[in-house]
Length: 258
Ligand SMILES: C[S@@+](CC[C@H](N)C(=O)[O-])C[C@H]1O[C@@H](n2cnc3c(N)ncnc32)[C@H](O)[C@@H]1O
Image (cartoon, rainbow, N blue to C red; front, side, top):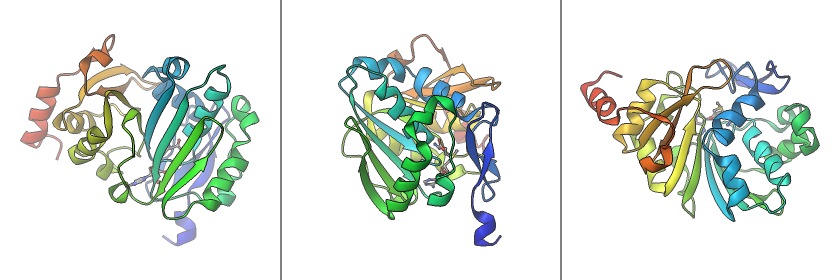
């Protein structure tokens, strides 16, 4: 594949918001049924982040895979609707940054139009260098964007409250769904932290279980049956249906997911 053929291409999802298609991973960045709608359900509504943004003074978030930057734009939009927004530090990593000209064309629909996402993301992608980059996005929101593979990224300089685990799926992006990765995320986490992901694969849940996360299933977004929540303290998963972590960890060690 030539460098040009490897570049992610813009594609439209059913709610009118754009996403990208990655020829390298042969996968879309979001649910084709609606990029914005899916991100809201998986990362903001189901794990309780919408309420936390209203109640807390400070929140630290870690995102695996900055991709189109949609979650940053959504976060900025949520914060602007609050009378007393918390300070939010958003840590994210991206190994294959989008080129600024492509980012300029992003359109995340009417709800996020006032954020002018194309312009903001174009400037972030043109200014970001390999390694750690820090941007003051608004009075309340700081972006810490690491350009490079997660393996090379530094530990955030504060404990994380919410994890957006948003790589491509385990079949094509396996290196971000291992027990070692979830072990490392665990070392970043506050005891009350919640990790959420669109993924409901048993292999992914087993890797979390091996790393010592408590796990729950939640209804999936836009036609997907389930998504996954995880925490270090099972009290944070009250109200959700739990999975049997020990059984999944045993299956992992027996090689069921090799
Ligand atoms: C599903 S997409 C991300 C979606 C993104 N959160 C968004 O809203 O657009 C997965 C992202 O993970 C990135 N990625 C894949 N492997 C990576 C790695 N080892 N380290 C850092 N980023 C990686 C991909 O380049 C891609 O941008």
